[in-house]
Length: 103
Image (tube, rainbow, N blue to C red; front, side):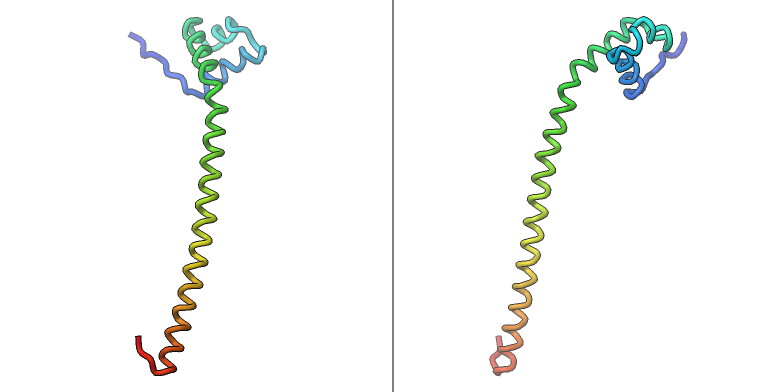
């Protein structure tokens, strides 16, 4: 019994795009790549059903990127505040040592 061929997602997309773009007909790609028409039909259906989600992912990534940028700004601000607090604490400690006060 011959082993079933497997196709990469990139190959499937390329084949479907050849037909959708009008470069070839479905019959031409099926003959060229020796693909059964029913298999090609499933690929095309899957491609068309999932196409809208591709654009939705960009929106999700965009909002995630905005949140990451916001958190990075917050980390930067808090880091600066911590450095200032350390300097002030060091100055107060050195002043109290000079004045003979112990903490």
